[in-house]
Image (cartoon, rainbow, N blue to C red; front, side, top):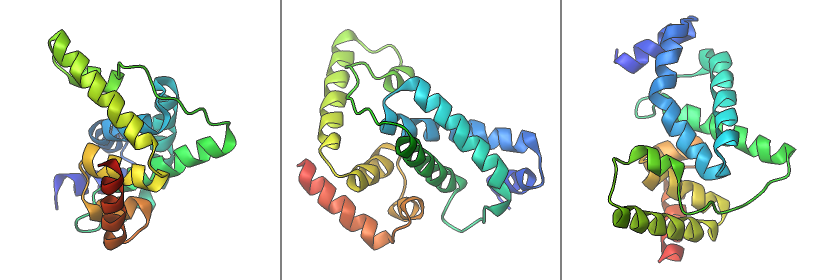
Length: 176
């Protein structure tokens, strides 16, 4: 049994430390996904807490499948949570200023010219993604920003691998 599977089994039995390890490993990915959806740090933090609270309560229902990690399950919960969030509140759509805190945290003191270039590219990417339909935007973010396979994206979005590949193809065609 793999290390992650052992953690999942322990978490299913109520081991809080095992669930904490799952949180530490997958929390940043859930945060990035939700941040792409909200563009607001505080809202994202609140939603991440909500996602992991739901996951903790429902961990016993998680079934280990070959080729699909727990991160897919967590990202599906995150997707449903952010949909519920926007359904119950008035959405505010805005492209954030040039500085992206998530990218800033991940970088290691780039030169000012590199930072400016990265910020400009990030802004262009956000604007281009904003023009895509929601499903295409989700596929692009999950595939290329989060680095998930089309099978994993299909698990999250409840679509077949083939459907994800078609959506990805159409989205990339629009982005060109």
